[in-house]
Image 1 (cartoon, rainbow, N blue to C red):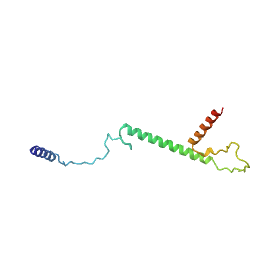
Image 2: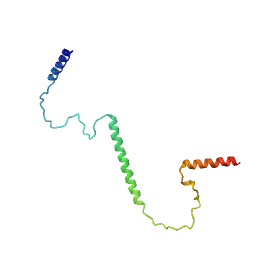
Image 3: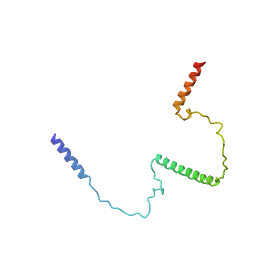
Image 4: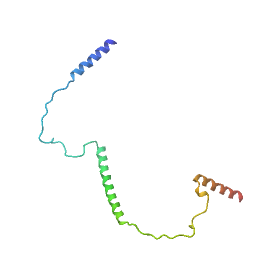
Length: 121
């Protein structure tokens, strides 16, 4: 077992020595590569392009909607309104103690009242 491990590690070291850095000459170019497109967008996967296009369209919609809201806001102005005092309560208001409770209690009360009416008749 020890011999196999020693020979495997020796082979790995030999492979590591074979892969070494190599000196490469670098030359300057006067112009861009002919195949390169002059674009701000990366030529990524279609899903990324779609996401970018969708984002741009959303930004345009938001910008136009906010401009329209500003225009509407300018059209609306404050208005002075006369306030009159009333001597009595609103006619549609009910005097009930049950209105303040949670909906489950109101349901229970209504169910109890219906049961009482059925039993009474």
